[in-house]
Length: 69
Image (cartoon, rainbow, N blue to C red; front, side):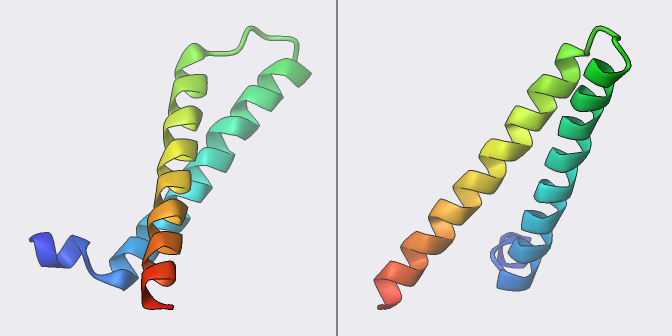
């Protein structure tokens, strides 16, 4: 199971899913502001989680690239 999650293709799929969910939750926050409704803190927490997940993936990917070069 560990080999499956270390596969580069699976990591890229997770990366794009993370970006998509981050955009989804950020757009829900923006829509709450546009509609003058109080925004949900749950959306904020989820968007921060997926944003950090995306950033950590990029950092790991860049570190791999620097080790190869």
